[in-house]
Amino acid sequence: MFGERMKRQLATQDWPALSIELIIVVFGVFLAFQVDRLYESRKLQSEEQAHLVALRHDFEASRRELVRVIDIHMRSADAASQLILDENFTPEDLSYKKFYQLLGDVQRIGTPNITRRTYDLLISSGKIDTLQNDQLKDDIDSFYALSEGRESYQYVQQLLSFESGVFVPYVIQYLDHVALVRSLHFDEAEAFDPPLEENHFMKVLGTPQFEGVVTTKWHLSVDYVSTNESLLRSLDNILQELDENLRAFD
Image (tube, rainbow, N blue to C red; front, side, top):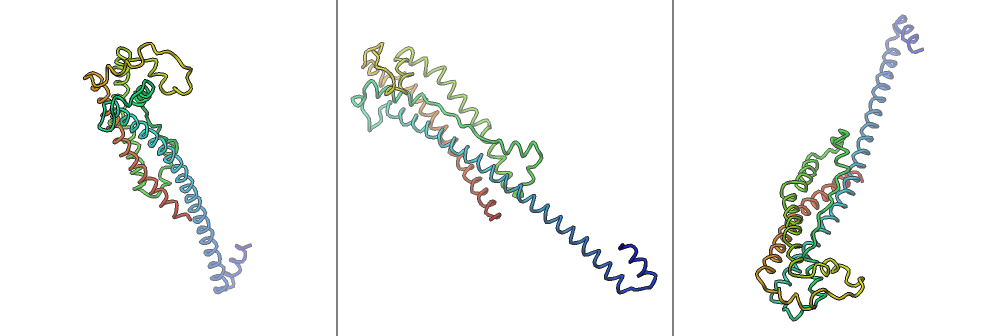
């Protein structure tokens, strides 16, 4: 129909009508292009927003894990400090139960379960570029590289190696390993007679071997706390960036 009108207008040299027809056609094509472009833009924005929300959930989960592990190793360092008899603690303050509760805290080891599911899906699907903020992408990449990097791995290996190669063998030889294992559940466990005298631990307090073992774990725990606190600061910065990017969609 449009073609027939064009032919008649050309035959009759009806230039004004022909011009109007062409303008209408061009405008229609332009409008359709703009609508399509707007749709694609909104679709990409919607995808980006969904990815930002998913990333935030992952980083919130990772933050909880880092806080949990930091707390474990701060408790470990604090218990170790008490057992090497800092200025606020004396042997007379210790009971059998208290000693093994502190020793159990010294032994504790925690490793954070860093969540990176959304990031890996974005990388594997090629959709990482839906994130428009290049700085955010760089910071996320750096965080995951640090969390799985040599320093974090080295501390975990040192902690595990120390526990299996030094701490547990020392307790088995000089203390009550059964009491140590049960120390986390003293209130729930049935009463039992310790295989050693209840004040046997007093004989090891202050000895070079005991202080060497406990002091080493103190150092390992403090260093690991520092490493995870550094990761936590990076993570909090990313959460702030994610919030700033999400506010742009409000």
